[in-house]
Image (tube, rainbow, N blue to C red):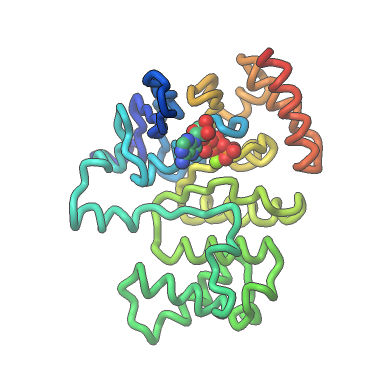
Length: 282
Ligand SMILES: Nc1ncnc2c1ncn2[C@@H]1O[C@H](COP(=O)(O)OP(=O)(O)OP(=O)(O)O)[C@@H](O)[C@H]1O
Ligand SMILES: [Mg+2]
């Protein structure tokens, strides 16, 4: 394992969800949700995984975190096949990555003050003495730009963007090397999205945190990622440097995604994007 090796190497990865077979039907061919996908995530790099709903983005995220076992192919984290890790190795690897979800509210205990929620994450993942946890929780909150007066608030007293930043602060408690953000900004207003994206960018620039940024939204992908991978029906249809992919897309599917970018309202943008993609598919 060299320092110049990628943090994550995804090698010919395929996955099919188990399908229930209808009574009396003949065996159905398993449909691949992920089909022969290969890419790398460098140390300190943000990779955007884009594609329409159902294209396999979250499935790849789950495979990367070891939550699903591939039908074929490998995910290597610092050179180690993560699906071959056992026992203590597997537990040690668990600290290497964290996930940030679309809806942080569902993962926050409504009765726990947010400072305590971050301190609790430190308790689960860390080796810090109890006395230090509150100070470290405070500094994690300030790293996601939530000031000292936020510490004693309850989740219901925060905005969506603030809650999302609490989710990020909790994820940072494990000192991960990789953050998988699955539509982490999708539930936020556009202006708030920009603030949270800024926090992610700072974490990347200041601390070299690597990210797999899963999104429908090419505008944010353009802001954050050095490289973009475009998925369609479980396959990579295009991959390359962000600027190159966006300024000169080679694939008609990617062009359709790009056409949807300038629309500010995400709901309208998504509806328009769906129309375009449906037209393309015909
Ligand atoms: N638990 C599951 N069981 C069966 N099939 C699933 C399951 N989860 C996802 N799929 C199927 O796998 C394919 C890829 O789904 P996935 O959730 O990875 O898409 P996605 O790109 O994350 O979509 P979205 O943007 O809507 O989140 C889809 O066809 C989906 O219907
Ligand atoms: Mg998804």
